[in-house]
Amino acid sequence: MISLLVAVLVGYSLSIVINASVSAATLVGFGIEVSLSDRLDMISKEWVGLGTIYLPLYLILHAICFWLLGRILRNRAVTTVVARVTYAGIGALSLMAFYLSFDAVMGSGGVVVASTRTMAGLFAHAATGAVSGFLFRLLNHGPNSQSD
Image (cartoon, rainbow, N blue to C red; front, side):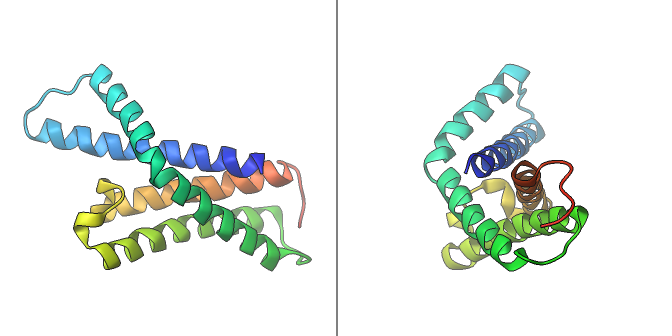
């Protein structure tokens, strides 16, 4: 359980940093100066602000996906590398499916994280899911585990 919370908090935090960075870059593109202090303030406010909606969704989504993957991989002879890559892949795909499904149902006005409106933003956020999956597997089975 602790490994899931750590992995989700790291992935969520990376996601917030990406979103705040995209927002800051947009403001700079409009000619508005954004200092480091402003950027850190944006990150902290988004971390707390999106924490009521996005963080629980991120946690539930990853808890379900990682649990299901663990059940699928149970009693299978897989190498450490394959297991870590598989968890990273399911973390990335789960977030991508979540964003695309949410967008299809709610439209672009209902996007949970604004920076996922672009393809680059979508892939960047999917990468945070990959980090979460990789970290979850690493924390759950240790750096030297040989197989499931």
